[in-house]
Image (tube, helix red, strand yellow):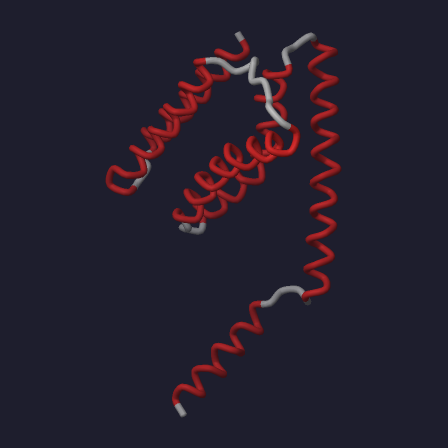
Length: 167
């Protein structure tokens, strides 16, 4: 009898958490995917035109406009998670996004379209990638917290790297 009451109580709480009907959720998902595809094409085409008009390398436009533009949703999600005290969710988002970007976003187009020349990226790019990954691992592992000082170090690496790209 006790099991039956708890089961019905959990069933009611699940029903209360559903925000949208399934058909509306599916429609929103399909529309969102279509908008992402359309806006991605628009961003890449616009960034390429801006780079050509300003005689700036595609790499700098990519590293500034496209990366910041595509990273904003992750940044908002991470800030929102941290604000709510969901630090595991924030860190998981950061790690998951980076692994997804490196393995899927880079790997899938190469599998589909063949080899890709990476002439625009050099030793310093790889060093910064490994350095920031190692520091995130080290900072997160030490006492299971990332302090303000460590965050400032990470921001400093970002500023240094982007200054290096622009200069």
